[in-house]
Length: 100
Image (tube, rainbow, N blue to C red; front, side):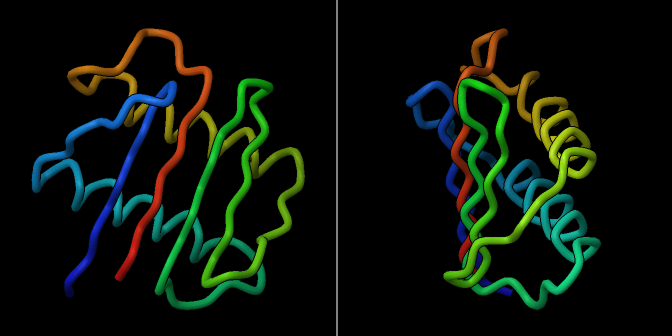
């Protein structure tokens, strides 16, 4: 599977090695697969804003999220991303894109 994962935190791009790119792709793919009325990922845009709101656009369509999934997704992603080299200790804004 050919894929591209892009990540920026606090408007700064974060370089991902093969392991992290693969890990993020699989974890986010699993999260999205667990959401109602989603399908295969061709393109995915995920953002967390400075107020902690999570938005997901899957294959050009917004995915509606309720409070509980937002909190789970936000916590999971912040836990994966925060230890990466070049990421500030406080994540105010996060943008992630996956193209398969």
